[in-house]
Length: 186
Image 1: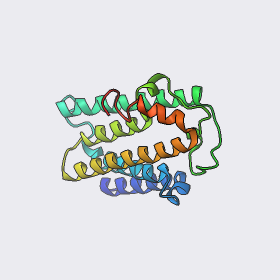
Image 2: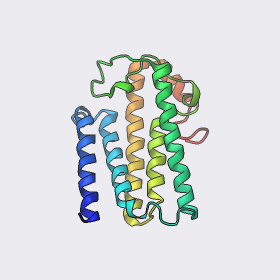
Image 3: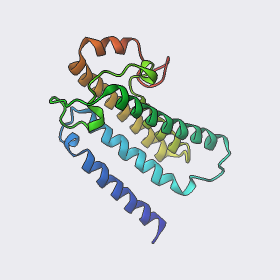
């Protein structure tokens, strides 16, 4: 099969997967999952578009930075999920039925990496997007990574509103002493 057709088929399958797991969120544009869906789609597009050049010049400056961002992305998601499971516990949120199960924590997690950034999972996606982008920098990838970054920002802002509703003053106080994505910076 033609490699381009194969990448389109792979993108269609990934889109189907993300659509199924995001189905409830896609029906509620006021949920953070609505915006996160477009983050997943953008990252999948970047990865599949750049697949032919993924290992070209693996030790060049951009490739080295790309690999660093991709590795940090994996570390952040593993560490962040571990903290959510270990400290956060599970609790159903009647106000957010579209949430994925791991998002419905019983306790506000403010320890470990969460002490410094409120959204390490989104930071992971941000680094994944930029790491995939650096594999091939061209006008299309610049547009896509910019849209993914915007969608991640919107996802985080909407989730923060949901968290204020759910945890109230505790979350508002937490926002004041932590950053959104990058410790001490943003």
